[in-house]
Image (cartoon, rainbow, N blue to C red):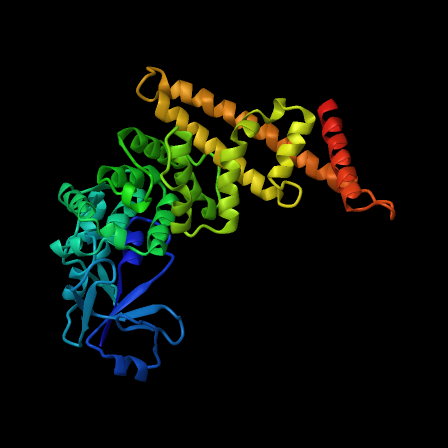
Length: 398
């Protein structure tokens, strides 16, 4: 029985990225021996065990064979006779097919370390094409470093996999998991570039009819996220992708079906609709009349959930900058300077609206009033509205 550290932990170590999770492969053992040694079985499709003390995952070395369509269409074979090299061969990319034994010796039969140095994403074997999830994983791993490129042969496989339509068989939960990791990567633009290169977006988001123009808008969104101008919570980043067609004056066929397909939470749906319906009001918020300002804040539920509006403002800034980049990139000789001025303008607007909203919160907290016992619910609501209008008027006069 031999134990090896494998996959992402070694990849991240060689990339000088903080290692978050460790996975291990066990060669020359069996489920019975693992249980006897105190490991807890958790795998349904193949034997995976939790270490009795560290709770880290240990998987028996295995090979696999494609027997059906989609992500789950595999038959796995585990045996004490399965070698480390055989186990590594079934992995997706060479950068993930590296192992280290308990003495620190590195095993790299597919030259993953060389590809890491060259920043190349290359498939380990032709079996790569059997798992459609690898389309998303390859695109997502390209976000780890600005210099990462998908090897031309691997990119050809990605395009072939998309054309076969197997992306449609992936559980949406796995799709979103990979997209979220890519959106949180160092260079999300790389993920969008490769997903557009192999025409994957139409299958990932049914109803979004991506073409070359819309593809450039998705890549522009990635470039804006690359710049880390503002931060958007992980749960809302996927909404930025859904809003690109809207901000690009495109459309989504059967939008409700797409939202159901993505299994968005109620909060996500509300933020999505709020960004669409209140975009113009937020863009011109500082020049709105007092009652229009207050009505907008009510529609956005600002007085109960103020944090949501700050998220919406950050998202609106990202989407606006992305739209400006996609419109002007090919038409302006001074694009970088113009884009910098545009970002400064949006940043100033965001800063001013944020200050006003924070001031509203502070004054609302200080000037809470009691209500007469004879007042009914509607009268109380009216009085609260009038009080908040006075707060806005007071702030505007300052």
